[in-house]
Image 1 (cartoon, helix red, strand yellow):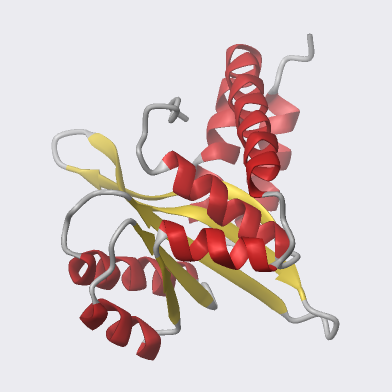
Image 2 (cartoon, one colour):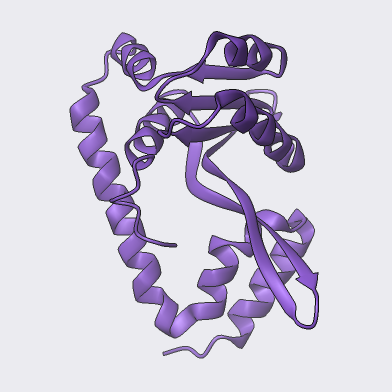
Length: 193
């Protein structure tokens, strides 16, 4: 994972993670949608991602998932929304959150029919304030957690590179039964040190 402190979308991701946590979801950052192709050599391509992913088991043991796309740029919201809904469909995510600095009304109308909620940063902050959150305190906590996670990943890459790479990237693109098998296989093949 690369360092995202200079990424303009980073603050939107932190705010979205706070929202998902407040809603009772376990959250993950930057889940990559990867594919492989073979043209003269096997290559892995990152096609897109889910900026913040949340998952939860409801009281009846139904699995529920949320995903968000956080964008700070001035690109067309409707084009990004269509791409995002394709990613939601690929991952079988129940509800989407499209967070952008500015969202045109036509994108909001389309999003409503696709089970995607749209928020600007200001709207997201108001929503969090309505939950009686000290947003700045929560923001600093999430920033510290993100930094700690990034540092932990970097520290483990040297000794457990294949396992870290699998858990960071490939895990999200495999069937659940295959993940269990692959993780056990990787753990068995790691040199204990």
